[in-house]
Image 1 (cartoon, helix red, strand yellow):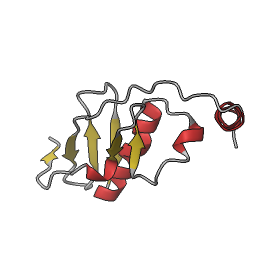
Image 2 (spheres, one colour; image 1 turned 180 degrees about the vertical axis):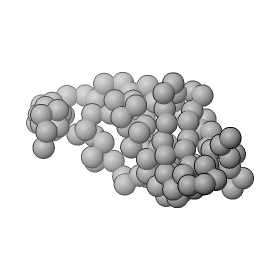
Image 3 (cartoon, helix red, strand yellow; image 1 turned 180 degrees about the horizontal axis):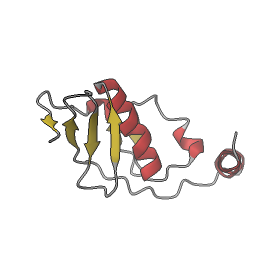
Length: 112
């Protein structure tokens, strides 16, 4: 365990502090592109500046999207480690965003 994780465990596990608002939107647009030569796919979002994920398979892109969203929206490690394996994020209002519902287009745009 690193220091931030220990602090999160004390704050949220021991002291039972409430999770601060995360402000995760209910939907996020993703744009996908693939490099023809390497097969590497990357996704960016016009809704989230500097958001970029990469992977060689749909599964890898979904996993990276999930993990990057947790970091992007500063979800405390204590909660991030207790969320479903790349399945869903529960928002403050109780709504669930299911990452597995994200569909990667069959016809990807190729990088120029």
